[in-house]
Amino acid sequence: MTHSPVRHTLERWAAGERIAPLPAREGAEPPAISFEFFPPKTEALETQLWHCVERLATLRPNFVSVTYGAGGSTQERTHATVLRIVKETALTPAAHLTCVGATKEAVNEVAERYWQAGVRHIVALRGDAPNGETYAPHPGGYAFAADLVAGLKKIADFEISVAAYPETHPQATSPEADLDNLKRKLDAGATRAITQVFFDNNIFLRFMDRALAAGIKAPIVPGILPVTNFNQMKKFSEACGTSVPGWMAGMFEGLDDDVETRRMVAAAVAAEQVRLLQANGIDEFHFYTLNRPDLTYAIARILGVKPEAPAA
Image (cartoon, rainbow, N blue to C red):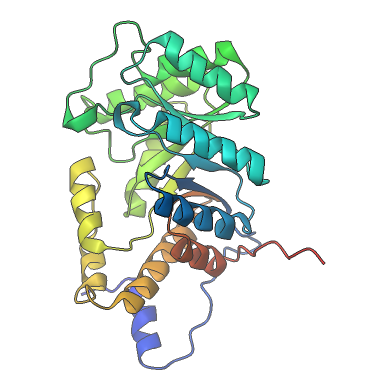
């Protein structure tokens, strides 16, 4: 049986050996990073989110994105969170915006409000229908993400990120059709693509090869999910068609009630994933934080990202 480098490292750590830091690519700088947050539903969750924002802000991310619920269900909370980030931090926010359940006029109004508030970056998504329903374009709305991107560029010169799917969107008719859709979004004016979560780097690298062959030259940023609860992550992965390597299940086996060790394993797994991607020339990563800062912060420090020094 072959062992992953992470497993080998953890076995050495458990045996009491001193472990050297993960090797960086020769001459490599720490990676560029960005973070995703979701808008809170309660006052307690608002406090948790803001703790997350403040802790991760010290790492000087390129930007931070704020999600939009299925069917646009968190529109006002998303807007309020983004505006608070603008007013109370030096961070660059990226507001998620979707096509679901809204007319073009309504979506355009939201985009115009963001621009007037100083928000210059939008994550443009088709979005999911609420309650597991099948997606259907609004009769008076933007049908798909490429249409939304084109509409946003008519409103103002937004920086626009879109989604990419290394393992193909579950509703795409084929990998080729999914890649064609990504190209349409980028050709419509998007700046970059951020990927759906993946855990097998080979899948991502093959996807990158196919994207290059299709003429896609815009940056494709890997989406990294630190695993805090393996069983929950596995259910989520099954729902969105994300592969989970067998070795990964073994890493978390027996740790359901051992939170401290589970966090150390999670940090090692994510840090190794990033390091191996860096070795293949990838230098920018988007972390799905789930509004929990500590694990993402630890991973960033392992990768050499240092917090901003406090003012003297």
